[in-house]
Length: 332
Ligand SMILES: Nc1ncnc2c1ncn2[C@@H]1O[C@H](COP(=O)(O)OP(=O)(O)OP(=O)(O)O)[C@@H](O)[C@H]1O
Image (cartoon, rainbow, N blue to C red; front, side):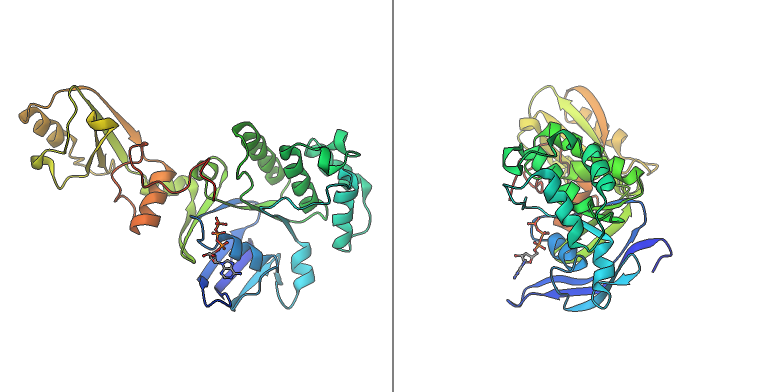
């Protein structure tokens, strides 16, 4: 276990009673004070993993320590270090915001602390709603109440399971800002998401889970640098119906109804192949109007890893492919 690991997961397996293997030997350390995004397509095992750490689902084998406590033999100590914001909004609709959040704190056996609840509600812009019944709140405010509940017992670790699934763009940005502020206050944040944009925007580190296995963990910036390839987009004067034979075998794809040729290359290589590509186009009499290049995004990397098992294999994901995993608006 790393010295600064606040959650340490070792060889974790989960087989549901149905015989389905949801986790297949997960090893993962979460560092104190980071925002860690666990990214994976539907059914990859994200919720199972979080539920085990939070003591909601029993592991089949393996160990998990949270804030230094074993989640089974020291369940109470481990659980009280954790705040969980589940995917589903579950509160008593007829209770007030204040009562809901204070009651949650009590569940962890913590003594009443009105000053803390006030701080949490103010930080989440819920203070002026403290006496309102949950049922009267907007969807965004209800989500904030869920976060306030999760923070009521002063956890060091906060899990957010799909925090912005189904919320509008404005609220999504607001939530991101809020999560950053929590990190500033020293809370370690682990969020699961299948919105790649969310991981790209927020995370210090990203873990990619697919079919119950963690297939990659890295600093977001390093990941993008290391695995990110560049793409050269050649805007053609006339559309092509297929990539010319002479160019077959190169990492080329047609996009934009044949008006763009997209060439993927490794910008770190001495010979990027661009000069050769342009020479071939010239020889074939294929005219182009414009050229531009772009860095591949975390989304490209994700598609490559999850669908092809290796980085750099998919031609492009500039909207031209239909192979994207879930993107905002694509609910389960
Ligand atoms: N109680 C259960 N019994 C049997 N299979 C289950 C159970 N709970 C989850 N699963 C299966 O385990 C797999 C992982 O589910 P999990 O909810 O952990 O995935 P996820 O990555 O969180 O997906 P999502 O993004 O859809 O929430 C899925 O195939 C799911 O059908």
